[in-house]
Length: 72
Image 1 (cartoon, one colour):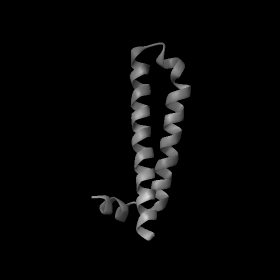
Image 2 (tube, helix red, strand yellow):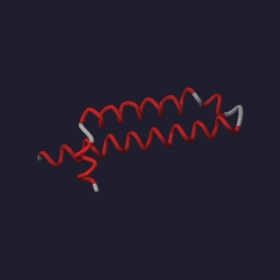
Image 3 (cartoon, one colour):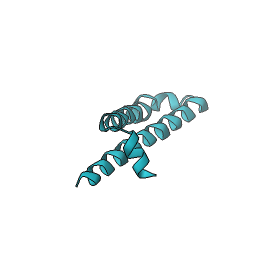
C-alpha cells in the first residue's frame, strides 16, 4: 500500500500537505483556543482541525520519508 501512495503523490503534493497541515494545526491550537473556551461547538471544531492537520502532516512526512528511502 505504501508504494501506491508513493507512486501517486509527488514530492510537491507531499510537501504541500505538510505545510497546509502545519498551518491548520497552528490555527487550531493558537487562534481557536480562545473561541474553544466559549462554546462546545468551537471546542469540537478545534479538535477537528487538530485531527485533520495531524492527518495532513502525517501523510506529508510519511510520503517524503518513503520517497527518500526509495532513492537511497
